Length: 363
View 1 (cartoon, rainbow, N blue to C red):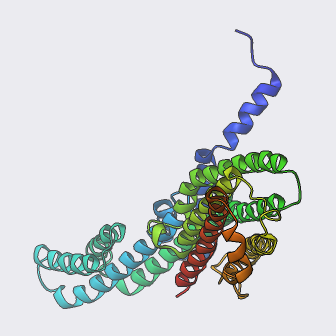
View 2: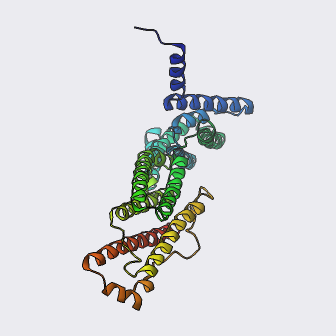
View 3: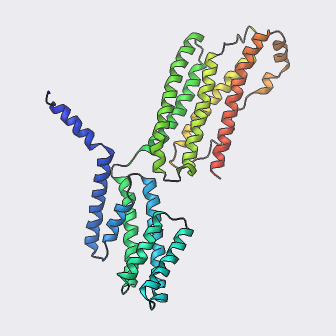
């Protein structure tokens, strides 16, 4: 077989260096080295617990690392309290009696707090403190807590400083860009161009929008991992899902507008109604752009735009002039007009329900 060219080997090396597993390994090794270097400079005892904490909680994404660190710190705290007071209360009893009592108490407390990883850490601290450090609990417990907390903080910082995961940022940016693209698509569709040309352009844009939405859904798994094991209850994740549903509904409505026959508004005596529908459609496009401008200000959850939401001008559709024009139309023409108005009504409902549920996330 032909030997690989230098360019091929370079590309292969670059792909290897950019693999997530290698980045995670290098990040972990670098973090442990920094922690050990700091521990050596301080000269404090029991510094190994900092490295142990880093190795135990670092799992490659911020959300799960935060949850593991939280459980480990809570478990360590409970175990330290139990062994500190338990040894003073039951230290005179035989170890085979006193230690099981302390472990039982630790398990009851950890179980009541629904700890999983912290449950085993709590029991381990009790055993280590009782059997190994019973004569130095006053110094061992504060140092263990300090080094554990320090290791967890360093693990979290490493995920932000060394090759940080961008799945959450990319999910947010992708949804915001989707809102911009939807608004611009609707604005372009309202331009005064031939109907056939508008349909072709809208077909192409909708295909691109659907591909973008499907790509964002595939990437959302990694973004949810960054939010931790309770990501489904996180307001940011709920907003992602809400915007996803709104974008999908609007794409379906645009696709139906593309497939519907365009009414001859002016010939049918419905020019004011046509102008009202165009005005409302432009307001919807501007509203989507306002959503994007509000959400891009901060990574935290923001409230919907304070300006009044555009409303479908029903009074124009029910005027005496409109009733006279409707009376002159055939059933097929009435159905053509009604079909487009139904789509606009669905768009109005999508905006209303999305902003209502959006506000509910802030409460």
